[in-house]
Length: 300
Ligand code: SF4
Ligand SMILES: [Zn+2]
Ligand SMILES: [Zn+2]
Image (cartoon, rainbow, N blue to C red; front, side):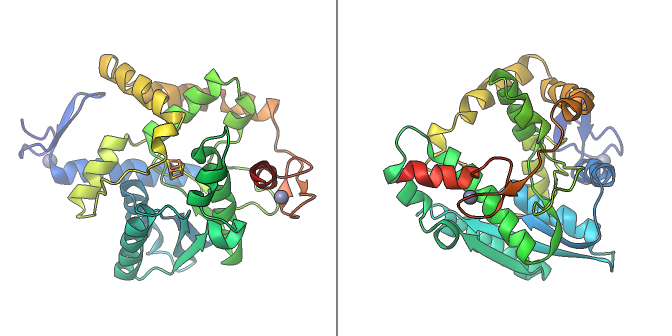
């Protein structure tokens, strides 16, 4: 089939809007939506930090943000990688992250669970009890990213969550009756003291489109999967959404749009929490003790 815009050979068919696109027009289609999303979410001046795992989403996000930030003298792009301490998995993606920061001449900062929490995710896996590794990983990674972003003076933290990730989170929050967590989803319009607001410029781009974009841009698309992903609760939602999208193209966009329509009500229902210093570590927390310290105590 041929590209609906220029007539050249198409590389993809976008099922949810029925268009065929060549490589060039597909890339432009992705870039246009990401630029629009960044404008809508608002990019602050100063240091913009990208959370860079080295996977395809974060790499594509780094390159797209580089295109957006580099023409501006009042903004500076950095990258932060969290090393969770997962042998046989993280070292490879960390090397890829380093390589691309060197190529783009972007300052690259690495922070590890070992240095921040005193133990690796592999250690946690041995001690975890009922809770899955992802529970620890998600909470600890957020803290590491925030700590490093603060340290380097970043005013925005960009994360490469794609449409599939965001639609899964929305569905999970509904199923778990956790509207408060849904109200806290990025992007954050309200700046909380001590917390760096997050941007999610890829939230409207399906995972397959991010993969194709990364391939067309010559980026590595790593096949490695985290050894702990098998226990991730998210896996079930990924399957459900994939089946729904297959039988009803546009499902993920509909979920995102429903969430966006509800967002003002969610913000009214759950206004930003008043933060206080955690009684154990002193970091900003909405509770007497932060989630990181609660989980660390759970491990002992
Ligand atoms: S799958 Fe779970 S444990 Fe592995 S990197 Fe992702 S959140 Fe962490
Ligand atoms: Zn074309
Ligand atoms: Zn704490």
